[in-house]
Length: 190
Image 1 (tube, one colour):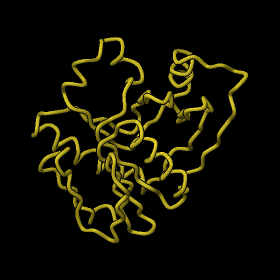
Image 2 (cartoon, rainbow, N blue to C red; image 1 turned 90 degrees about the vertical axis):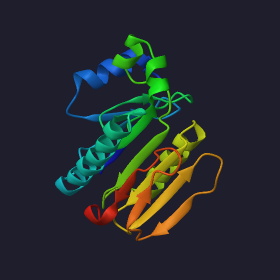
Image 3 (cartoon, rainbow, N blue to C red; image 1 turned 90 degrees about the horizontal axis):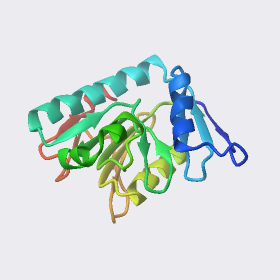
């Protein structure tokens, strides 16, 4: 995926203006980093889009059965505590966090860091960029994150307060104590 970062010091985009920019340009994917710079991302290719859909589907099925939280797809924006606006490929928050949001907050970019995130690296994604994004989630309160690196058949696991764990060619991933009994079979991803 190609990304372009545009310095926005002089634009001074408010949260509402950024949200409206995203709504007015739904065919583009935007994020903002903690400095307020605009990050424009190209759409994914077919293979990555399919893998993202599978991951979101698996997370959704588990979420429905488990009943303790809400899951989101890659088009959902989160306003992180550091000011960045990010859209992980898949994410989850506990019901308590969802119910603590006002109706207005549920309609815009959700003002919190998800408890669980997944980023799926396509063959054209820059690994360093994704690793920085995963550390940003971790630093902003995400309790568990998976960076699934299709290209190298590796998974980086980010846990709050811990060093990154790297798994080579794992067959499954566990949701640990965050997503109890969630197991993602990676055979469909590799």
